[in-house]
Image 1 (tube, rainbow over the protein chains, first blue to last red):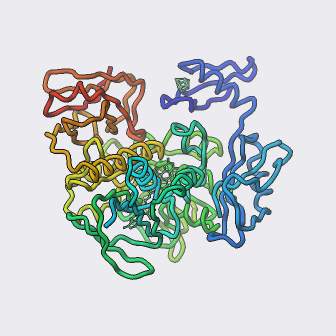
Image 2: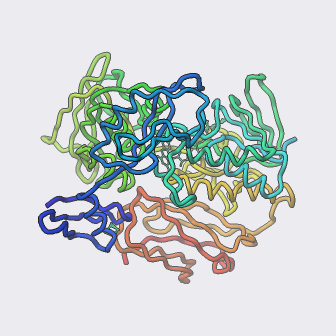
Image 3: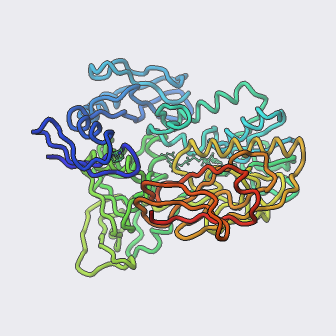
Length: 114
Length: 413
Ligand SMILES: Cc1cc2nc3c(=O)[nH]c(=O)nc-3n(C[C@H](O)[C@H](O)[C@H](O)COP(=O)(O)OP(=O)(O)OC[C@H]3O[C@@H](n4cnc5c(N)ncnc54)[C@H](O)[C@@H]3O)c2cc1C
Ligand code: SF4
């Protein structure tokens, strides 16, 4: 059994998810909560936002994000990979700075012009 | 002479300038003290911006980028490194820029200076004054713009969104965030941020707690946290010590309004911003205000929408002069902390009025009642309201025109 808070709406229901019982959710006030609870335990994912080193621009860091959510368990490994990346100005907002991070099939893109 | 001068090039100023352009003005200038446009969004690199407006989750810089790109195809002039020092009620604007000190004039002005962070919480904490105590926004700027970490072992005072976002950000960068401490019995930030920035990393949130002592000579070495009673007084025997080198303050934002006050514009003590009409006009004709300079927003999407109204109204003023309308006052009823706008022009052409407000306490199933005297004008059902989330009502203007004052009240259902 795991307890978590639903982020589906401001009500913030306290959910209890029973992993032993096909991820049955209790405590939710609507269907969205059941789906969220199940997903959060079976396959939680997050968009990662951070910065990478930048050369030749007006700032020494360039903000980036994963183009799509990646598995939550990979966040720290992804940070490690990105700490080795350097971009050179000019960079365009939306440009790929790293392809297929950690074999997830997800690209990392710049989120500003630099 | 400019048709419109916009003071501040954050999301509010950008949207106001673009909307004034779309509504026919051609001689517009944006005055920005920083070396680039985008305002505070430049340092908000996390995602979650633009969900309402673009139906996508953008990061702060990406959201700003969309508006900066739109302006590129217009005749709007942008002056960076340009600090506005003073404005007058006859719309003279005194600026300091690389060209030196000058005075420019405009037919209309939009005030969009944003807000700054409160630091007051810190001043009342007893103990030493070591380095290592930062506002969350300052730490965000160091890390996201310059790549510098404020410290390694961190406690966050206040559960505002910026503090929560920084808890996650510093954790991902390798710091240990020991706790987030909140004086009130509820969080000041969005639920989503509590879950994704604290719960995700097992960072405890202590509600009804505060920092009662700061220790350390040169650098912060530790703090004491205590539980508080209903009167927010520390309870003996609840002391918890934390060894930390960094304390981040996330204790609220205040609209930035020195310029507004000095120009003699009427201020609302509840918002710390100017009193505004439905078209974002202030007490001085032809001077408008929008964004965080008017009231602190949680979501930038609403900043953009409100600022577009300000820009359109500035264009209307330049083309057709001031409206000589009677005024309807909006009054705060029980448990409503403030409303924006605070006043309506009775003859406004707007078909509906957007009213923003914050409640003073937590409500579960509730009703928001818009009334005048004994007449109920409109009732809105709400499943849940907290002070941390701005509320939004849309009211058809024709329902309001016959009244002189309108009261907005929050009630249990
Ligand atoms: C540290 C911080 C973090 C935030 N994080 C989030 C978040 O995660 N998500 C979210 O939705 N909202 C966030 N907000 C709220 C966010 O600020 C607003 O949503 C939005 O950016 C407000 O836009 P604005 O244009 O009113 O203000 P700002 O973005 O603050 O822009 C104001 C601009 O005016 C300029 N200016 C001020 N005074 C002068 C002057 N005298 N002369 C010339 N220029 C001047 C400033 O340099 C700045 O560029 C945050 C706010 C702060 C302070
Ligand atoms: S379960 Fe439904 S009602 Fe409860 S927080 Fe989630 S989305 Fe909202």
